[in-house]
Amino acid sequence: MNTNRYIIIEKEKKTAILYNSKNLKQILNIHSTYNVGDIYLGQVVNILNNLNVAFIKLNKWKQNGFMILKDEYYFNNNLRLGEDIVVQIMKEQVGKKGPTVTRNIILDYENVKIYPYSRDHVVFEKKFNFSEKQCLKTVTTLLKPKKVGIEIKKKGKRINIWQVIKNLRNLEKKSILIEGKIRKINCSPYLISPRQEIIDIILKKKLIEKDTVIITQSKTESLKIKKKLISSQIKKNKIYIEYCNEKLSRNYPCYLEYLIRALLKPSIKLNNGGHIIIEKTEALTSIDVNSGGFNKLKSSRETILWVNLAATKEIINQLKLRNISGIIVIDFIDMINQNDQLSLLEYLDKQLRLTLSGSKIIQISEIGLVEIIKQREERNIYDMFTKQCQACQGLGYKRNGKLSNKLPEYFMELSSIFG
Picture 1 (tube, rainbow, N blue to C red):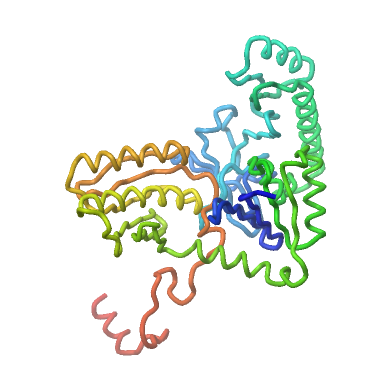
Picture 2: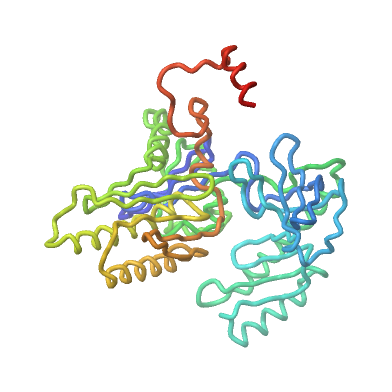
Protein backbone atom coordinates (compact mmCIF):
# COMPACT_ATOMS: atom_id res chain seq x y z
CA MET A 1 0.00 0.00 0.00
CA ASN A 2 1.56 3.29 -1.12
CA THR A 3 0.24 6.22 0.87
CA ASN A 4 1.55 9.29 2.61
CA ARG A 5 -1.74 10.52 4.10
CA TYR A 6 -2.85 9.47 7.57
CA ILE A 7 -5.68 10.51 9.87
CA ILE A 8 -5.02 9.64 13.53
CA ILE A 9 -8.16 9.65 15.68
CA GLU A 10 -8.22 9.86 19.47
CA LYS A 11 -11.72 9.25 20.83
CA GLU A 12 -11.16 10.35 24.44
CA LYS A 13 -9.80 13.76 23.49
CA LYS A 14 -12.22 14.05 20.54
CA THR A 15 -9.24 14.88 18.36
CA ALA A 16 -8.04 13.99 14.87
CA ILE A 17 -4.60 14.73 13.45
CA LEU A 18 -3.95 14.80 9.70
CA TYR A 19 -0.46 13.65 8.90
CA ASN A 20 1.06 13.91 5.42
CA SER A 21 4.61 13.20 4.21
CA LYS A 22 5.96 13.24 7.79
CA ASN A 23 4.37 16.65 8.45
CA LEU A 24 1.31 17.66 10.42
CA LYS A 25 -1.30 19.21 8.13
CA GLN A 26 -4.34 19.84 10.29
CA ILE A 27 -5.77 19.27 13.77
CA LEU A 28 -9.50 18.85 14.43
CA ASN A 29 -11.02 18.92 17.88
CA ILE A 30 -14.62 18.81 19.11
CA HIS A 31 -15.33 21.34 21.84
CA SER A 32 -16.67 19.92 25.09
CA THR A 33 -19.59 22.40 25.13
CA TYR A 34 -20.19 24.43 21.97
CA ASN A 35 -19.53 23.24 18.42
CA VAL A 36 -20.14 24.93 15.07
CA GLY A 37 -23.48 23.73 13.70
CA ASP A 38 -25.01 22.82 17.08
CA ILE A 39 -28.64 23.96 17.39
CA TYR A 40 -29.95 25.22 20.74
CA LEU A 41 -33.21 26.42 22.17
CA GLY A 42 -31.78 29.48 23.91
CA GLN A 43 -33.16 32.28 26.03
CA VAL A 44 -32.60 36.02 25.49
CA VAL A 45 -30.93 37.33 28.66
CA ASN A 46 -29.63 40.73 27.54
CA ILE A 47 -30.10 43.14 24.64
CA LEU A 48 -27.61 45.96 23.95
CA ASN A 49 -29.23 48.05 21.23
CA ASN A 50 -26.39 50.60 21.22
CA LEU A 51 -23.95 47.79 20.32
CA ASN A 52 -26.49 45.97 18.13
CA VAL A 53 -25.92 42.75 20.10
CA ALA A 54 -28.11 40.31 22.03
CA PHE A 55 -26.87 37.71 24.52
CA ILE A 56 -28.46 34.27 24.43
CA LYS A 57 -28.31 31.79 27.31
CA LEU A 58 -27.32 28.37 25.93
CA ASN A 59 -26.10 26.58 29.01
CA LYS A 60 -26.78 27.08 32.72
CA TRP A 61 -23.09 27.04 33.67
CA LYS A 62 -21.18 28.10 30.53
CA GLN A 63 -20.70 31.36 28.61
CA ASN A 64 -23.70 32.94 26.92
CA GLY A 65 -23.76 33.11 23.15
CA PHE A 66 -23.97 36.50 21.46
CA MET A 67 -25.96 37.42 18.38
CA ILE A 68 -25.10 40.32 16.07
CA LEU A 69 -28.52 41.80 15.35
CA LYS A 70 -27.58 43.61 12.14
CA ASP A 71 -26.74 40.22 10.58
CA GLU A 72 -30.23 38.89 11.39
CA TYR A 73 -31.90 40.81 8.54
CA TYR A 74 -34.17 37.88 7.66
CA PHE A 75 -35.93 38.30 11.00
CA ASN A 76 -37.87 40.87 12.93
CA ASN A 77 -35.37 42.03 15.56
CA ASN A 78 -37.97 42.94 18.19
CA LEU A 79 -36.48 40.54 20.71
CA ARG A 80 -37.83 40.42 24.26
CA LEU A 81 -35.94 39.57 27.44
CA GLY A 82 -36.73 36.04 28.55
CA GLU A 83 -37.90 35.02 25.07
CA ASP A 84 -37.01 31.50 23.86
CA ILE A 85 -35.45 31.36 20.39
CA VAL A 86 -33.85 28.64 18.25
CA VAL A 87 -30.24 29.47 17.36
CA GLN A 88 -27.26 27.76 15.74
CA ILE A 89 -23.57 28.09 16.65
CA MET A 90 -21.73 30.01 13.90
CA LYS A 91 -18.36 30.42 15.62
CA GLU A 92 -16.99 28.58 18.62
CA GLN A 93 -16.06 30.39 21.82
CA VAL A 94 -12.59 31.88 22.16
CA GLY A 95 -11.24 32.13 25.70
CA LYS A 96 -13.79 34.01 27.81
CA LYS A 97 -15.71 35.16 24.75
CA GLY A 98 -18.81 33.04 24.18
CA PRO A 99 -19.85 31.52 20.84
CA THR A 100 -21.46 33.53 18.04
CA VAL A 101 -25.02 32.38 17.27
CA THR A 102 -27.63 33.05 14.60
CA ARG A 103 -31.31 32.36 13.98
CA ASN A 104 -30.48 31.67 10.34
CA ILE A 105 -30.43 27.87 10.80
CA ILE A 106 -28.65 25.88 8.06
CA LEU A 107 -28.89 22.12 7.61
CA ASP A 108 -26.48 20.79 5.01
CA TYR A 109 -25.25 17.54 3.58
CA GLU A 110 -22.72 17.23 0.75
CA ASN A 111 -23.98 19.49 -2.06
CA VAL A 112 -27.37 20.50 -0.58
CA LYS A 113 -28.28 23.13 2.04
CA ILE A 114 -31.71 23.91 3.42
CA TYR A 115 -32.82 26.94 5.45
CA PRO A 116 -35.87 25.79 7.44
CA TYR A 117 -36.65 29.10 9.18
CA SER A 118 -35.29 32.17 7.44
CA ARG A 119 -35.58 31.97 3.65
CA ASP A 120 -38.00 30.86 0.95
CA HIS A 121 -35.94 30.56 -2.20
CA VAL A 122 -34.06 28.14 -4.47
CA VAL A 123 -30.48 28.94 -5.51
CA PHE A 124 -28.25 26.97 -7.89
CA GLU A 125 -24.50 27.34 -8.23
CA LYS A 126 -23.33 29.10 -11.39
CA LYS A 127 -21.45 25.97 -12.51
CA PHE A 128 -24.74 24.31 -13.56
CA ASN A 129 -25.61 24.54 -17.24
CA PHE A 130 -29.10 25.44 -18.49
CA SER A 131 -30.45 21.87 -18.82
CA GLU A 132 -29.17 20.92 -15.34
CA LYS A 133 -30.84 23.97 -13.82
CA GLN A 134 -34.14 23.17 -15.52
CA CYS A 135 -34.00 19.60 -14.22
CA LEU A 136 -33.19 20.76 -10.69
CA LYS A 137 -35.99 23.35 -10.78
CA THR A 138 -38.47 20.59 -11.57
CA VAL A 139 -37.14 18.42 -8.72
CA THR A 140 -37.11 21.23 -6.14
CA THR A 141 -40.58 22.44 -7.16
CA LEU A 142 -41.97 18.98 -6.44
CA LEU A 143 -40.00 18.34 -3.23
CA LYS A 144 -39.45 21.74 -1.58
CA PRO A 145 -41.53 22.32 1.56
CA LYS A 146 -43.21 25.70 1.96
CA LYS A 147 -41.20 28.55 3.51
CA VAL A 148 -37.93 26.64 3.25
CA GLY A 149 -34.87 27.86 1.34
CA ILE A 150 -32.67 25.51 -0.70
CA GLU A 151 -29.16 25.89 -2.10
CA ILE A 152 -27.60 23.29 -4.40
CA LYS A 153 -23.94 23.18 -5.39
CA LYS A 154 -22.30 21.19 -8.13
CA LYS A 155 -20.08 18.36 -6.95
CA GLY A 156 -17.83 17.02 -9.68
CA LYS A 157 -18.36 17.31 -13.43
CA ARG A 158 -21.80 15.70 -13.49
CA ILE A 159 -24.80 16.04 -11.24
CA ASN A 160 -26.52 13.03 -9.73
CA ILE A 161 -30.21 13.97 -9.55
CA TRP A 162 -31.10 10.93 -7.45
CA GLN A 163 -28.41 11.82 -4.92
CA VAL A 164 -29.77 15.38 -4.71
CA ILE A 165 -33.29 14.01 -4.13
CA LYS A 166 -31.99 11.66 -1.42
CA ASN A 167 -30.08 14.47 0.31
CA LEU A 168 -33.11 16.76 0.21
CA ARG A 169 -35.33 14.11 1.77
CA ASN A 170 -32.78 13.32 4.49
CA LEU A 171 -32.41 17.00 5.38
CA GLU A 172 -36.20 17.43 5.43
CA LYS A 173 -36.48 14.48 7.85
CA LYS A 174 -33.81 16.06 10.05
CA SER A 175 -35.72 19.36 10.02
CA ILE A 176 -38.93 17.57 11.06
CA LEU A 177 -37.09 15.81 13.91
CA ILE A 178 -35.72 19.15 15.14
CA GLU A 179 -39.21 20.69 15.04
CA GLY A 180 -40.56 17.74 17.01
CA LYS A 181 -37.86 18.16 19.67
CA ILE A 182 -38.58 21.88 20.00
CA ARG A 183 -42.29 21.22 20.61
CA LYS A 184 -41.49 18.68 23.36
CA ILE A 185 -38.99 20.89 25.25
CA ASN A 186 -40.48 22.34 28.43
CA CYS A 187 -37.65 24.66 29.44
CA SER A 188 -34.63 26.42 27.95
CA PRO A 189 -31.70 26.40 27.44
CA TYR A 190 -31.55 23.05 25.67
CA LEU A 191 -29.25 21.42 23.11
CA ILE A 192 -31.47 20.26 20.25
CA SER A 193 -29.02 18.88 17.71
CA PRO A 194 -26.97 15.76 18.54
CA ARG A 195 -23.27 16.25 19.13
CA GLN A 196 -21.10 15.28 16.18
CA GLU A 197 -18.34 12.73 16.45
CA ILE A 198 -14.90 13.51 15.10
CA ILE A 199 -15.43 11.23 12.08
CA ASP A 200 -18.53 13.29 11.18
CA ILE A 201 -16.38 16.44 11.08
CA ILE A 202 -13.82 14.66 8.87
CA LEU A 203 -16.54 13.58 6.44
CA LYS A 204 -18.17 17.01 6.41
CA LYS A 205 -14.87 18.72 5.61
CA LYS A 206 -14.15 16.09 2.89
CA LEU A 207 -10.71 15.31 4.27
CA ILE A 208 -10.68 11.68 3.16
CA GLU A 209 -8.84 11.32 -0.14
CA LYS A 210 -7.72 8.32 -2.16
CA ASP A 211 -5.60 5.81 -0.22
CA THR A 212 -6.05 7.62 3.10
CA VAL A 213 -5.20 5.55 6.19
CA ILE A 214 -7.30 6.09 9.32
CA ILE A 215 -5.58 4.93 12.50
CA THR A 216 -7.62 4.24 15.66
CA GLN A 217 -6.80 3.01 19.14
CA SER A 218 -8.93 -0.15 19.17
CA LYS A 219 -10.68 -2.65 16.94
CA THR A 220 -14.05 -1.56 18.34
CA GLU A 221 -13.47 2.02 17.23
CA SER A 222 -12.29 0.92 13.80
CA LEU A 223 -15.51 -1.06 13.26
CA LYS A 224 -17.62 1.96 14.25
CA ILE A 225 -15.75 4.15 11.80
CA LYS A 226 -16.07 1.54 9.05
CA LYS A 227 -19.83 1.43 9.59
CA LYS A 228 -20.01 5.22 9.42
CA LEU A 229 -18.02 5.32 6.18
CA ILE A 230 -20.21 2.67 4.56
CA SER A 231 -23.35 4.64 5.45
CA SER A 232 -21.69 7.75 3.97
CA GLN A 233 -21.01 5.89 0.71
CA ILE A 234 -17.22 6.27 0.84
CA LYS A 235 -15.68 3.93 -1.72
CA LYS A 236 -13.63 1.07 -0.28
CA ASN A 237 -10.60 1.75 -2.47
CA LYS A 238 -10.27 5.24 -1.01
CA ILE A 239 -9.63 4.35 2.61
CA TYR A 240 -7.89 1.91 4.90
CA ILE A 241 -8.63 1.52 8.61
CA GLU A 242 -5.97 0.30 11.02
CA TYR A 243 -6.00 -0.16 14.78
CA CYS A 244 -3.26 -0.62 17.36
CA ASN A 245 -2.30 -3.84 19.05
CA GLU A 246 -2.55 -4.07 22.84
CA LYS A 247 0.97 -2.77 23.48
CA LEU A 248 0.69 0.22 21.12
CA SER A 249 -2.82 0.97 22.35
CA ARG A 250 -1.53 1.74 25.85
CA ASN A 251 0.87 4.40 24.49
CA TYR A 252 -1.52 5.73 21.85
CA PRO A 253 -2.72 8.82 23.83
CA CYS A 254 0.89 9.66 24.78
CA TYR A 255 1.93 9.74 21.12
CA LEU A 256 -0.84 12.20 20.25
CA GLU A 257 0.06 14.29 23.28
CA TYR A 258 3.66 14.44 22.00
CA LEU A 259 2.49 15.72 18.59
CA ILE A 260 0.27 18.38 20.17
CA ARG A 261 2.99 19.55 22.56
CA ALA A 262 5.43 19.87 19.64
CA LEU A 263 2.89 22.01 17.79
CA LEU A 264 2.42 24.37 20.77
CA LYS A 265 6.13 25.27 20.90
CA PRO A 266 6.75 28.91 19.93
CA SER A 267 9.99 28.29 17.99
CA ILE A 268 9.92 26.53 14.60
CA LYS A 269 13.10 25.66 12.70
CA LEU A 270 13.29 26.33 8.97
CA ASN A 271 14.91 23.89 6.56
CA ASN A 272 17.55 26.45 5.59
CA GLY A 273 18.78 26.94 9.16
CA GLY A 274 16.71 29.98 10.15
CA HIS A 275 13.75 29.91 12.53
CA ILE A 276 10.52 31.73 13.36
CA ILE A 277 9.01 32.47 16.77
CA ILE A 278 5.23 32.63 17.17
CA GLU A 279 3.78 34.34 20.24
CA LYS A 280 -0.01 34.44 20.71
CA THR A 281 -1.64 37.10 22.86
CA GLU A 282 -5.27 38.04 23.37
CA ALA A 283 -5.05 41.08 21.07
CA LEU A 284 -2.81 39.77 18.28
CA THR A 285 -0.23 37.21 17.18
CA SER A 286 3.37 38.29 16.63
CA ILE A 287 5.77 36.34 14.43
CA ASP A 288 9.51 37.04 14.46
CA VAL A 289 11.80 35.80 11.68
CA ASN A 290 15.47 35.06 12.47
CA SER A 291 18.26 33.89 10.19
CA GLY A 292 19.94 31.87 12.93
CA GLY A 293 23.23 30.45 11.73
CA PHE A 294 22.31 30.36 8.04
CA ASN A 295 24.98 32.03 5.91
CA LYS A 296 25.56 29.77 2.90
CA LEU A 297 24.86 32.23 0.06
CA LYS A 298 27.27 34.64 -1.60
CA SER A 299 25.90 37.87 -0.13
CA SER A 300 23.95 38.96 2.94
CA ARG A 301 21.23 40.36 0.64
CA GLU A 302 20.62 36.92 -0.93
CA THR A 303 20.71 35.27 2.48
CA ILE A 304 18.10 37.63 3.96
CA LEU A 305 15.75 37.28 0.99
CA TRP A 306 16.12 33.48 0.99
CA VAL A 307 15.37 33.21 4.73
CA ASN A 308 12.38 35.57 4.49
CA LEU A 309 10.87 33.61 1.58
CA ALA A 310 11.36 30.29 3.39
CA ALA A 311 9.88 31.83 6.55
CA THR A 312 6.85 33.04 4.59
CA LYS A 313 6.01 29.53 3.43
CA GLU A 314 6.36 28.13 6.97
CA ILE A 315 4.35 31.01 8.48
CA ILE A 316 1.43 30.30 6.15
CA ASN A 317 1.65 26.60 7.05
CA GLN A 318 1.67 27.36 10.79
CA LEU A 319 -1.24 29.82 10.58
CA LYS A 320 -3.32 27.13 8.89
CA LEU A 321 -2.13 24.32 11.16
CA ARG A 322 -2.60 26.29 14.39
CA ASN A 323 -5.77 27.96 13.03
CA ILE A 324 -4.54 31.38 14.13
CA SER A 325 -6.85 34.25 13.22
CA GLY A 326 -7.33 37.95 13.95
CA ILE A 327 -4.46 40.44 13.68
CA ILE A 328 -1.10 38.87 12.79
CA VAL A 329 2.08 41.00 12.79
CA ILE A 330 5.19 39.60 11.07
CA ASP A 331 8.64 41.01 11.73
CA PHE A 332 10.72 39.88 8.75
CA ILE A 333 14.47 40.36 8.60
CA ASP A 334 15.11 43.92 7.39
CA MET A 335 15.71 44.27 3.64
CA ILE A 336 17.20 47.44 2.19
CA ASN A 337 16.61 46.61 -1.47
CA GLN A 338 13.09 47.66 -2.58
CA ASN A 339 12.88 44.98 -5.28
CA ASP A 340 13.49 42.32 -2.63
CA GLN A 341 10.79 43.87 -0.43
CA LEU A 342 8.33 43.81 -3.33
CA SER A 343 9.20 40.20 -4.22
CA LEU A 344 8.59 39.13 -0.61
CA LEU A 345 5.22 40.91 -0.39
CA GLU A 346 4.06 39.48 -3.74
CA TYR A 347 5.02 35.98 -2.60
CA LEU A 348 3.25 36.47 0.75
CA ASP A 349 0.09 37.76 -0.96
CA LYS A 350 0.08 34.83 -3.41
CA GLN A 351 0.48 32.26 -0.62
CA LEU A 352 -2.32 33.87 1.41
CA ARG A 353 -4.73 33.74 -1.53
CA LEU A 354 -3.84 30.13 -2.35
CA THR A 355 -3.83 28.70 1.17
CA LEU A 356 -5.73 30.90 3.65
CA SER A 357 -9.18 32.02 2.56
CA GLY A 358 -10.52 35.12 4.31
CA SER A 359 -7.06 36.61 4.94
CA LYS A 360 -5.22 39.58 3.44
CA ILE A 361 -2.35 42.00 3.97
CA ILE A 362 -3.60 45.16 5.69
CA GLN A 363 -0.54 47.38 5.84
CA ILE A 364 3.23 47.64 6.18
CA SER A 365 4.51 49.87 8.96
CA GLU A 366 7.32 52.41 8.66
CA ILE A 367 9.69 50.03 10.44
CA GLY A 368 8.88 47.13 8.10
CA LEU A 369 6.30 45.18 10.12
CA VAL A 370 3.76 43.38 7.92
CA GLU A 371 0.21 43.27 9.29
CA ILE A 372 -2.21 40.54 8.20
CA ILE A 373 -5.81 39.96 9.19
CA LYS A 374 -7.46 36.54 9.02
CA GLN A 375 -11.12 35.73 9.65
CA ARG A 376 -11.85 33.41 12.54
CA GLU A 377 -13.53 30.14 11.57
CA GLU A 378 -12.83 27.71 14.40
CA ARG A 379 -10.83 27.63 17.63
CA ASN A 380 -7.07 27.81 17.47
CA ILE A 381 -4.88 25.13 19.06
CA TYR A 382 -4.23 27.32 22.11
CA ASP A 383 -7.94 27.41 22.94
CA MET A 384 -8.22 23.69 22.15
CA PHE A 385 -5.43 22.35 24.30
CA THR A 386 -4.25 24.97 26.80
CA LYS A 387 -5.50 26.92 29.80
CA GLN A 388 -4.09 29.78 31.83
CA CYS A 389 -1.06 28.92 33.95
CA GLN A 390 -1.91 29.19 37.66
CA ALA A 391 1.71 29.99 38.57
CA CYS A 392 2.18 33.04 36.34
CA GLN A 393 -1.51 33.98 35.74
CA GLY A 394 -0.95 34.26 32.01
CA LEU A 395 2.20 36.42 32.16
CA GLY A 396 4.38 33.68 30.71
CA TYR A 397 7.00 33.91 33.43
CA LYS A 398 7.26 33.25 37.18
CA ARG A 399 8.85 35.53 39.78
CA ASN A 400 12.09 34.37 41.40
CA GLY A 401 11.90 33.71 45.13
CA LYS A 402 8.83 33.75 47.30
CA LEU A 403 6.14 36.41 47.29
CA SER A 404 3.81 36.57 50.29
CA ASN A 405 0.09 36.80 49.58
CA LYS A 406 -0.38 38.78 52.81
CA LEU A 407 0.55 42.47 52.71
CA PRO A 408 2.64 43.65 55.68
CA GLU A 409 1.16 46.28 58.00
CA TYR A 410 3.66 49.01 57.05
CA PHE A 411 2.66 48.64 53.42
CA MET A 412 -0.98 49.17 54.35
CA GLU A 413 0.06 52.36 56.16
CA LEU A 414 2.03 53.57 53.13
CA SER A 415 -0.87 52.86 50.73
CA SER A 416 -3.20 54.92 52.95
CA ILE A 417 -0.72 57.84 52.79
CA PHE A 418 -0.28 57.67 49.02
CA GLY A 419 -4.00 57.09 48.48
